[in-house]
Amino acid sequence: MKKILILSIAATFLLSSCAAVFMGKKQKVVFNTGSSDAEVYLNNEMIGEGSTFTTKVDKTKGQSQQVTVKRKGYKDQYSAIVKTRRPIAFWPIKILFFWNYYGMVIDRLRMDKNTAFDREVNLEGEENKLVIRGKTDKFIDISNMKVNIKNTKKDFVFFTVKYDPKNLKKSMEAAELKKDTKDAKAEAKKAKKGKKTKTLNAEDDVKADDTKYSYNVYQTLRKTGFVDTVNKVFQDNNNTLVLEGKINKISTFSIHTRFHAIFYKSKVYLTWYVKNTYDEIIDSLVTTELSGEFSEIATYESSEWKYDGFEKMVGDAIDISYLKLHQSSKLSKYLKMESDFKIKDALLTIKAPASKVTDKESASEACVTIKLKEGTKDVGHGSGFAISQDGYIVTNYHVVAGKYPGKYNDLTVVDAEGVEMPAKVIRTNKYRDLALIKVEGKFTKGFAVSNVKGFKKMQDVFTIGTPKSIELGQSISAGLISNERKTESTNLLQLGMSVNGGNSGGPLFDATGALHGVIVSKLVGSNTEGVGFAIPGYLIADYLNINFN
Image (cartoon, rainbow, N blue to C red; front, side, top):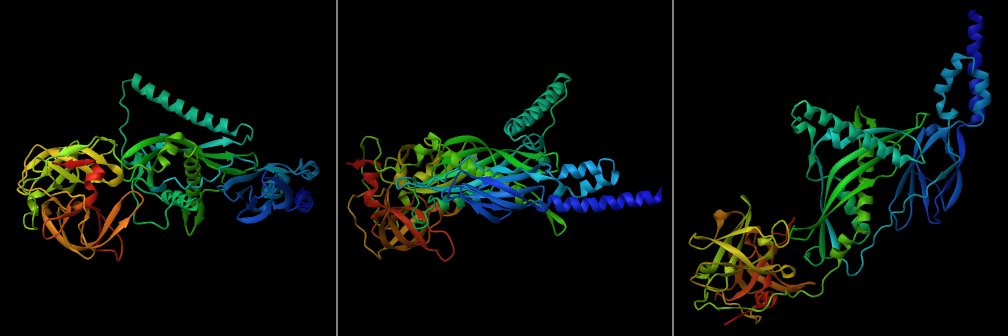
């Protein structure tokens, strides 16, 4: 009996070796891309190009292997080839082994050679053409890609799905529906029994204010010309649109064949917020997109799991979602730059101040701090200055801007004596970053607004405002005018002056009290301190469509 067993095992290994020879390490596979300019990579190595080609694939490198299709002007397409069948040479060997237990063991051990990929692989998937920025399109700034998954048990779920190439999408949808139905029944059952629904705690949600997906989308924007790599200083509401994404749900599908081949797809549920450069939400779009196919999403390295593959898969779905945004009229209508920057408000006549600011000592009497609230929440502050003695104040649009266009923050003006007065917005010019507000109060002094250019290069100037904190109200800064620069939508005075965010909306004036501009911004970054900008004072009346009597 012992001799028979030994002979049986020996015969099994001998025939197994023969099987390995007959079935081979590699197999021929025909790849169809449908594109003459396509380059196909298998496991990061280029294996062919063109609309159709045949190559040999090493079966021992995995039951599923990663395919990447690259085309100029298109997003990379990710697919997986998987073992779905037995090679023809397997069946004669199988007949010889059917009676032998050890033969079945060897079959399992040599699954890499005893199974095969499809003879023909179709890579003619959905084409995600890159959208190139047109001459009249705004640039796009990707401000943030947030993760806001409120319940990981419902919104961050892994599903196991059987491989069915003809009905794969339906199988994934069915798996999600089954889970949703099960959850709904469980909730209904709890409600019927009078049990309270469990309150979510910190372990149930996943939140992150910024992720590496922001950089992924940025790379696509840069590649397609939507990132302004030349003019990085003068971004404004007319030449730049802001996108922010919020990931609400991720479904991950592990797709199995009967030969232990697995690949993965991810479905990402996103809300995209379209914003202007003042951080106002001008629209939102909800998308649901599937990623490509990925052969692995995690690797075990240096005694720990790394999830670079998972992040790449989710990032792929986000990239596809971004490209499809351009098919929406909601995005396309906001992308076009304007050429008419005049406001539609009728001409407003304001009573000129009888007592004008005539020196830097009295300038503070016309300067104010503007406190901002959204409901009961303090959301910052800015500066402003009176242009009449009966309550008209000029400031920046970005000072008064709220969460949505036309819905301004609640404004409280604090004058030089510390008196607080509610203010309302009278008119604005978003493209010029100007706002006219009014209080029901009186000022002892007001700045005279002239439509004549009265400044000189290298002229000494001052500003009064509230940098950093409310406690620093009525702070004065000194500097000089470097130059006047023209942008697409406005003119700006470049200043050699120390200004901060709270100075926005404050006056720029000289020692005689003559108004030369409205402080609007500063450069931020290494080695850039002391560079600020102001809207020229001689353009205020034109930009706001006002005059004085």
